[in-house]
Image 1 (cartoon, rainbow, N blue to C red):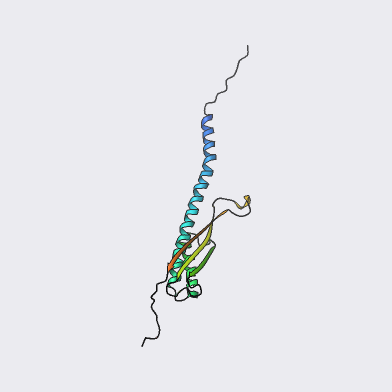
Image 2: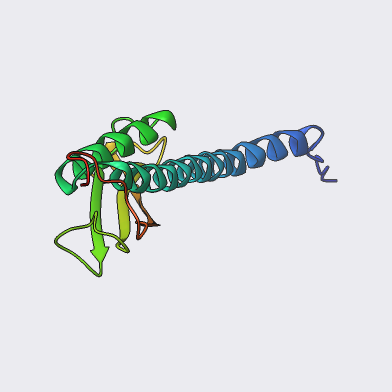
Length: 153
């Protein structure tokens, strides 16, 4: 008579569920951290575009406006913890592209940057994967402006 030895499976479900949980938890954690990083970058780029457009409009001339816009955009990104992120600030004006501070001009500032996705080793692909971000903000220049200098006769 042959005896069949019944194998005991007590406790193996707990082990299987634990390993399955770990295998699913790691990718979910990475996705969640990546979404938070991209959202932080989106907030930073949007704030940078808005602040850069306002700084450009308040500057006295186009050269000073460009300098102020880049400075303010960098500061806005740093406020979101993205101080080392690459930054590109581009200013366009209509209907006077050569003189943005003319009355009735409309200034549009476009800010581009990118955020690196977290927890991705460079060994897997050379460079850490990143997510490109950009935002635009438009500011009109009023028709009537204060003129400083010589008093009117």
